[in-house]
View (spheres, rainbow, N blue to C red):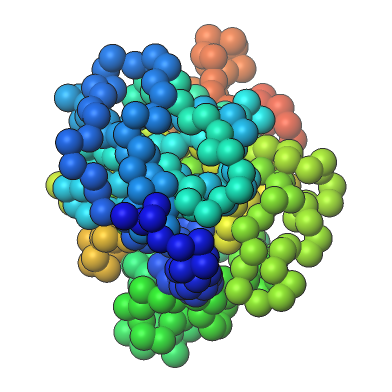
Length: 472
């Protein structure tokens, strides 16, 4: 029926739809990227592919249908293992106005649209599938003068988990550091629920009239401080840029971020933003010093400078240093009903989410070995269907796992066995280190070198002995 419409009528319909899409694009569902919700219905009797049978090539042309002003291909993916997987979709000669979605019929969720500009160098979209069944949808306008190109499902990777995180070579830090009292963990949010779930860590009484709850949080020896923009209404869907600290704007984010970290010298950074419209807790692993950002809401619509880090070449890659495996496990076993996973190869959105995440890992990279080191940083995309209270619980679980990780690098001078007391047992360990009878960890070396002369010897034994007898 739609193919029989006059060319003029179809053009008017496409123009109207494009205008509505631009409105959505600039304001609706502000999250990892500006999102246009899928407008096409799910087709009946979809071809179905079991993810366990992949990888294999599969053309999608046989599922083509005309829906309104779009030519649409849809195929359903199932997986009996019900685990997060990495999907690779290969595209050749993709038109610039083509769109790709992942849709989750059971929960009414989705991610996308993804555009031709987000293809990797190998002409692939790398997507994360974390609800089942999933429907892969490819669209091009029926009025497009470009060839529809070729889209093939080329394979689906192994479950999206990294191996156990290796403890990196990091300069340990003293638990009691007079230069900054309790070490600070900085957490940020963008759109709800992420700004709301960290509100209780704000030190701003206007934003957090209930009072700051991050002082020596849970008695763990770390202060947790949050920054985030505000929106009106607070439970917005059409959120846009917001107002206040870290507005969803490239220039405002940078101008706010660097003074904040310069003042706080955080030991850990977790940046959050809303991700797919679902219940996911997505650990973003990769961040690029990219130049192809999605435009923001206020001119100039690209970062300045672009790429953001002028000291590194364009597309220089940095990585999350959060304890990602531990966080995924803790969220998975929390009973909150969320879907945590690690996105090892995909991109982090190419919009303000990735830009904010890049700033976090950028600071960590710069100050990893400083006198007030930043040990871990990374970004987490939070599903847009998660309610505020659940998101707050998951955020606190995430912060606890970060603290557990940071504690691996914390030491108290003289407390070599890290039992919370300085006593004769610590002297025995120092003597064993001196005699070569103990292969100390990096943290034990720092704890044993109590006079900080970069060598563990009898002088350290004397200092510890004096501490035990006469007190610190």
